Length: 313
Image (cartoon, rainbow, N blue to C red; front, side, top):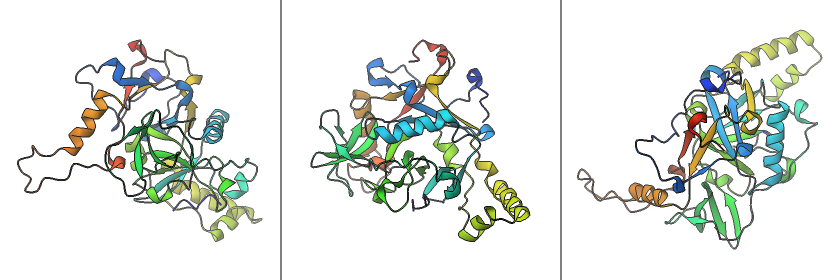
């Protein structure tokens, strides 16, 4: 069940660490029209203490029931003190409650892996794709389209809902692809993407879930053995502990973290895409690469906004 997907903030956000690898260096002021603010109701963050903070933008338009469930789980403390308990090299990092014995009372969620969507607001990426007839972005989230249907892509940093074999069995166990996992597209619900902190995700301790025998011992009637197994499991997972999770909107406006995402489309985004396609000016190349770029290798930039900058939503 739910294994099928092949820094203490202490609410003193004036001391929040600056964003990591996904932040955009602001060497020159960008045109305001090229960036959109992230709705604080859709901004959640996972505090991993000294290991850093993972900021996630939810996308309710694509998966309304699942995103609402994740937001509620954050607010209820569901993830507090839990772990990224399954981190597989070159695959995914998965977090939540881990065990069926704990999850059984959580309501199941519908599969919201694709939906009917008007093409308006879909910004085509501009070159072919191996997995979808058309790919592009909607509000900065990578998406595919076919016959009026639209779905979010399992690119690195996207946030999906793990589930059992049956489609409508997801709960609030989340996974984050560490590498492109496009074969999962349209099969698992995507609720958002990491807009800052993928360096934190990448540094997580690699660990596999307990097997059936270990799990049976953990929840068995032999109390000393169960305690021993719980201590053993905690020792493996402690580096991946989620100290606390928060919804940005629940914090005071003058201290909450705030982000902006580059608009798609926008002149700045078009220029960035072109810069990643055109290598004709590189004198060291013997063969100039084709003018294409994999959509998963170019995430839409996001940037942290200082709370006192006057632009926080």
